[in-house]
Amino acid sequence: MPCVLIGTTSDRVPIETCDDMRVTPEEVEVLLAEGMKLAPSLGSTRILRAYAGVRPLVASDDDPSGRSISRGIVTLDHEKRDGLAGLLTITGGKMMTYRLMAEEVTNLACEKLGVAKQCETATTPLPGSETKTEAKKTYSFAQKAAEGRHGTLISSIERGDVSNDALVCECEGVSVGEVRYAVNTLHVHNLINLRRRTRVGMGTCQGELCACRAASVMCHDAESAQKAINDLNGFMNERWKGMQPVAWGDNLAEAQLTATIYQGMLGVNRIANEKRIEYYEI
Image (cartoon, rainbow, N blue to C red; front, top):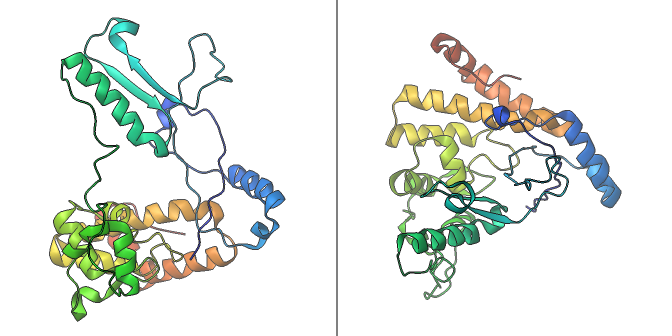
């Protein structure tokens, strides 16, 4: 299913709020209004979720307003700039340039430490992204999805039996075998990290059924029941955080069904009240 991102807005964020960014209704309205000028169908398209993040841009010392702030990469040698030896800062940039940013600061650190070696991440493939040499296989939907996430490491994911091939997340094609692989090999210890590794909960239902399934697999393989329940509460709160600013139409109906499942059927709100932990609530 194709996915489209629209954005971004831009605002100055106080450092005190960096760890708890929230999307405002005004930001959503601005993005939709401007986006509809280019694609009018946005007005009738289901918006899955909204999210916000902090981009650490660096203003020059002679521009306190920040109006001419650079979007480029900034490397600060604090020994030259502030007289603080042994401290480097790499900032600015964006996710697409993170590898290059790491290369620049690593090369500078090696130079200062007298290490005659250059960073090799531009030419050395990450595990799983090596050139494929085996013949093309006929994969199922879940196997194709897993190959896109793990590349050649897909051979390490157990498959071929009813248990491992069962789907945890139908939207993103995540199997029980992939969840077990993430837990046992990729150091995944909670549902949010599992989402980052496998995309569990990132599909159109935003965790409606797969969160419970994933928590069950992790509980069976690696966690205590109480830890799994707490983890499930936190995961659904995080999903709701992104759905709440766009909770109308089909998205609100989906959120209400999710609430019925997790509160009405599974009773996570009752369990959370007993344990005095935050829970998912519409």
